[in-house]
Length: 195
Length: 195
Image 1 (cartoon, rainbow over the protein chains, first blue to last red):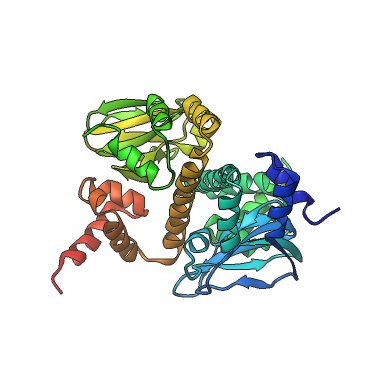
Image 2 (cartoon, rainbow over the protein chains, first blue to last red; image 1 turned 90 degrees about the horizontal axis):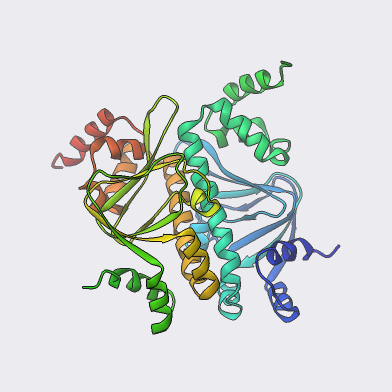
C-alpha cells in the first residue's frame, strides 16, 4: 500500500481530481514517521503545518497558568490536526501536539496549502467540508458539555471514538471530558458492571 | 442602501463574482424583518435556514434537562447564524435562536445553499473561509475557557464584541461565559472602578 492511498481516498470522496492534479497535490506533502510520546508542536512555536494522520494517534492540549493540562482534541488515522487558528494566521501556537502512539503523518505547510487552493480551486470544496466538519464537531462538543452529564458524555465519547478510548490514558480522557481522573474512574467502573 | 449591499460586500472581500452570478445569488435569498425577542428556531424543529444578519442581533442557546439556559453564540450585523450541524445534516435542531433586538436577516435555505455551491463553485471558497472562521472562533473560545479566568474572559469578550456587550442582558453574557450572573456582576463592578 502506498503512503498516499488513504489521503487520496479521503479526497476523492468529496472531489474528482485528474492524475496531474493528484501528482501535484502529493508533491506538496511531506511524509513523517514520529515515535510514540513525541511532542511535535510546542506552545508559542509558529504553527505552519496541517497534518493528515496516516496511522497512529495524536492529541492536542493546552496548559493553564498553573500548568494544568486540558486535552483539546484527539486525532487518529484519517483525521487532520493542527492548531488551526495559528496555522491559518501564521501565529505562535496556543497548544501543544504530541503523539500518543507511533504515528505516520503527511504534512501540508501553510505556503503549500495556499498554493494548492490557488492552483486547484476545487480543493476549496474539500477544505470547506473539512472545516465544516471540524466546526460542527466543536459545536456538538460544546452543546454536549452544556446539556449532558459526565456519564452521558463518557458514553458518547467511547461510542464515537472507540479507537481513541483504547489508546489514551484515563487522565487524558478525563481532561477531554472536563472531569477529574477519579470521577472518570467511578464512571468506568459503573460502565463495566454487568447489568 | 439596498438590502443586499452588506452581504455582497462581505462576499466580494473573498471572491470576485460577475453581475449574473450576483443576481443569481441574490435570487436565492429571502429577506425577513423580525421583531425583538422573537424565537426564530425552536429545539427539535428541522433547521433548514442559514441566516445572514443585515441588522440587529440574535443569540443561539440550548437548554439542559433541568431547563437551564446556556448561550452558545451571539451574532450581530454581518455575521451568519444557524444550528450548523442540523442545517447541514437536515436534522432537528439542538438549539434555540432568538432575536435580541429588531433584526433584518437574509435567509439561505439548505436546498439553495446546495444549488449555489453546484452552480457557482467559487462560493466554495467563500464558505470554506466562513466555516474556517467559525471553527477557529469555537477553538479559541474553548482554549480561553480552559486557560483564562472568568475576569480575563469577560475582558476579552467586551473588547471583541463591544456591540454585543451593550445589547444583551447580564444573564445572557454570564451564561455565555459559563459563570453565574452574580459573579459577572462582581467582575463588572471591578471593571468599572477607576484605577
